[in-house]
Amino acid sequence: ETLPRWSTAGVDERHGGFHEAFAFDGMPLCKPKRMRTMARQVYAYSIAKLRGWDGPADDLIAHGIAFMEKGRTGRGGWARTLNVDGSIADPCEDAYDHACVLLALAYAHRAGNPDALARGEEAMAFVESYLEDERLTGFLETCDGTELRRSNPHMHLLEAFLAWHEVTGERSYLRRAARIVDLFRTHFFDPESWTLGEYFDNEWKPAPGGQGVWTEPGHHFEWASLLVDFAARSKQSDLIPFARKLYSSAVANGLNRASGLAYGAVSRDGLPLDLISRSWPQAEAIKAAIALDRPEGPDLKPEIEARVGRLFRWHIDPAPTGFWIDRIDERGKAVAGEVPASIFYHLVTALMQYLD
Image 1 (cartoon, one colour):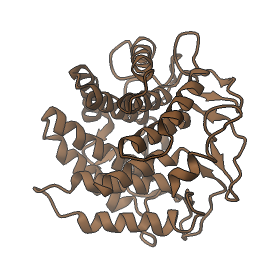
Image 2 (cartoon, rainbow, N blue to C red):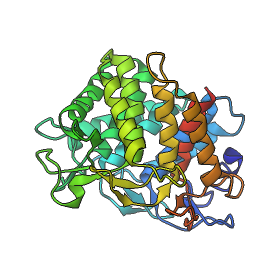
Image 3 (cartoon, rainbow, N blue to C red):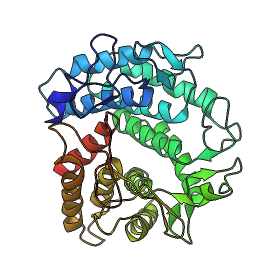
Image 4 (tube, one colour):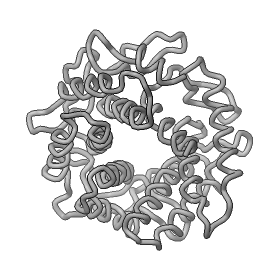
């Protein structure tokens, strides 16, 4: 249902790229186009082709990469945001966006796009030349640096490095991933509360005030599945207990007990901070449960089924065909004003893993 809709109406044939969001009446919204969204759509169509979709995946992948090229900066990076027509709106070179570019190009290369490998190598070189912390403690938020450091861009870089390792088999990508996992072990994960911090100062200490206690269940789930993936490739089997602890704390403290959906954020002490349940954490919960459904652990298959059921019950079934309800409030009311394209990436990944 989703691929036919987004591969036609979701494509901006006039200006290039893909529409950032739709209204629920099916009309595209003329919003600035984020580089991360463009990249995630390229990823989704690459996965679709690899899984046997008979639609025009090659054309869509090439169309997306060509539009992304309009956002190249003078230093060879990728701008954060483009205007609808493809001109650069925000030239900031952001680590999160570059992680999404890397992920998209890895799978576009695997799907046979002739330009993706060279573009991917350029993106990797840019990240290491301009975004790598000079102390070799992770990556900067932007080329100019910021006072706050975040774990989230590192998580997506870990995802991208694992993707390139999968596609090429080159251990250099696994070594890059290992450095991020080391940061997780030493700074991101709190062994007392089993939580993952989001915001840090430049010394990787929790940020002062509310940001220092802010945790996101969706990211706990996302990290859990990535740690299991990295453990399988690196043989660092001691990471599996970390993944279980992240999953356990998110389930114990991060769910709305009425709907069973993950909240947006909770404190390290388990107090709800953001009561909205978005669609992407529910997709990531499916991925985490699948990753942790292992012979040496509890049988999570009933939980996987329940999580898929909740995703459809709250976010997919009530929406027009091929769309989704992105935001549900704490009382179960749909409060989404639009359908963001960026969610497609989460749904494709989770549901493909579920089908497997």
